[in-house]
Image 1 (cartoon, rainbow, N blue to C red):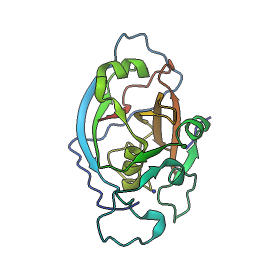
Image 2 (image 1 turned 90 degrees about the horizontal axis):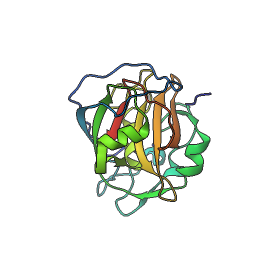
Image 3 (image 1 turned 120 degrees about the vertical axis):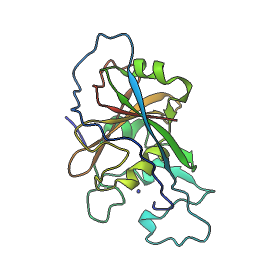
Image 4 (image 1 turned 90 degrees about the vertical axis):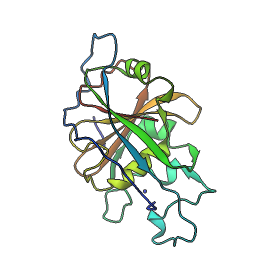
Length: 205
């Protein structure tokens, strides 16, 4: 059971080759710690520049004084006109995360590749205080690869994961996987013992 956007001055810096790996949702790992290898740092912005026209409205950037409202952007839809093709939104993501509103800011994320099958708690232990990112950060990266293009997010069968606080402030894992027709966006608790397999791409501040 697997699932399966504003265009301003979007800039991406990639300094490493992509990683291809297969996601295995059921495998568990007896290791005691995660093994993360740092990759490129990503820069992205969904803030509208002063005087920039709002055309078309569905893909316009967000004014600096407005909030990023997750439910207005994370929507299922794979039509050619969709700002980001999303073929599936998980029920947990919709319930816990789509209710959020966040400030609009520039995105700067560090990418890592997971070299060892590890659960969320183990990965958090290595990332430390810079582990958290935001839904607006995820959305910004998705707009750069709206149709599954090559970029910071993996578009193989391997997932991309982010640690984000939900609508009540509880930290959770949001994962994005390109499913062929569109992005599949899910979420799970950080206490879940699911092992994220080697090759998973991890994003942090």
